[in-house]
Length: 343
Image 1: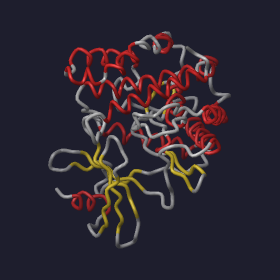
Image 2: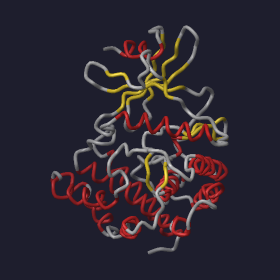
Image 3: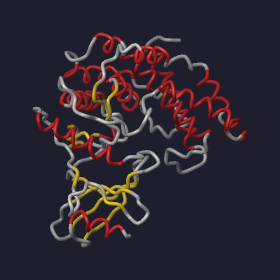
């Protein structure tokens, strides 16, 4: 089945311009322009290795959109497009799952935050989104990736990769392995708080990095990519915002030094709390700085684990791509710890 055969099931025509979008790490993405009315859409093949039950991400997306629609949410949101027979997923001959969503014109995304004002506005937008999708009674949200925020399992997976990795990979990553091993106890407080039920369960975005905000000039217009929406702790979203916003370099840059921006970190905290402060409990507010450290560290662990496993999860373009990503995250964590005056 060709792309146009899939597209016609969604929008009823094959008279389209199809352009690949290559900035994602997981799914295969295309921009589709209907030449008959110039309407544009996003078409994606869902990565079955990551999302083993694609229906979950569709159902979560629809549930979140309903929450946004029911609130006074001021931003735009992306709507899934159903096929001619009412399905939100179309299967090709290989049983791969495809979905289509609407497209918001005249927007842009950032790969890194340009300044503290944009950081504040972006974190505020994420906080506003999270506030809107967390009413007193939560809808049925399922987990699209089992154990995605199970940090205990992330550490165990890393340790398993050390035992199973090719000797050449182990030698190449020896410095990064040593640095990672020195911080193995860092996530333990998080793990203990989760087991003790000290962190309220809430709907989170799961991947709130700067690439997942659409901007109109410098103003956030929409929060996108809801594939990792799940029930967890909002500390994860804050940690990932801090991780992706404060990095002054591309996360693929393995040569980065002093890539943490303290001014942006403060802006991120203020923006994130603008709408959420009254909703958060003391355990959440008191652990924001800790959460930023843990999420950066766990991302380094995930990149390193994938490298040692032969780079089977994240998209890579060269042999040491995941190792460079690991180096970048470890340097970012070093900068944050220095700012927080933590040895």
